[in-house]
Image (cartoon, rainbow, N blue to C red; front, side, top):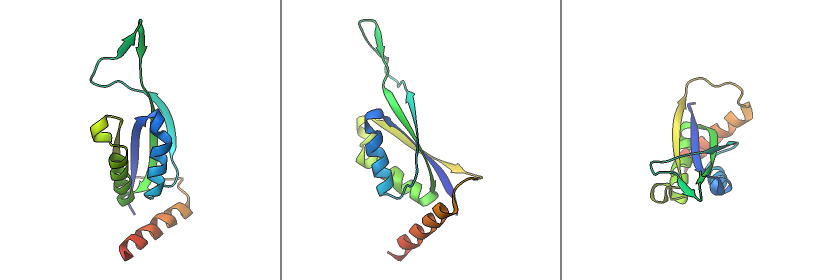
Length: 117
């Protein structure tokens, strides 16, 4: 079984919605980090104060096909491409330790169910 690290960086206000979408599409656990980001446009200032958007960095370890499914769902349901609310990417995992055997079993069962449909 091949695994991928799915990284979703979304506006902090979308964190819970993004996690719900991911779980509905096969994700199990998630690690959430808080960050700040800057884009191509200059930072907005208001009376000398600079506005930096708070972002959530969500990390999912998923079976490779599940990561593609979750990525597409996040992209479509959060309208990431059209509304500039975040970014999602997938990175291959070469070696993995520490994942519970019941989680690997859950991934395998989900793949079997998808093949049967």
